[in-house]
Length: 199
Ligand SMILES: [Zn+2]
Image (cartoon, rainbow, N blue to C red; front, side):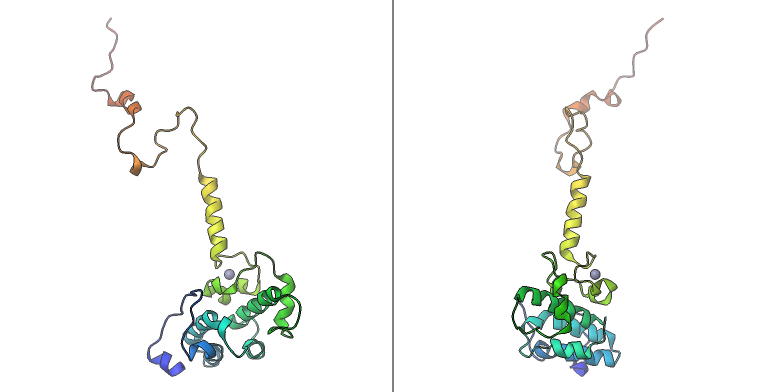
């Protein structure tokens, strides 16, 4: 896989819900990532991580135990794996499941209603220290960013005009098709010079 990628290097893939890659990426992206780290092939490892994130829900042989053993602590793959295991353990509820016995399963107690599906977070999140926090409110979270944008939009919205006094000039100029009738009364538009009283 590394040789193939090295012949024609590719950018990491953005997460697309419900889509899965053909083999070998479907099942072997985590091993490819670990190989990339060992070879210090940073771009290859990053591509492999993006493939792993895309496909992790569909891998037949559970990769999580092996990741806990092989991926260095706080490496991007370990960060993603911890978040995924905690989130899924919390969703699975009590009882034995795929994640039972994993160290990261203990993080399930930190999962909140607002904890994200880790797949939607920007890839850079796993390369940043915020990737250690499964409840990080950071620039890598598209839902958090959208909420912040909406908050700012509501704060910026001007108060409703009083008696139309402040109406002029506050509207979007692109939607104005004819000049306001009030414009006629602007003194600067007058063709006559101001009259001065005769002595
Ligand atoms: Zn982040």
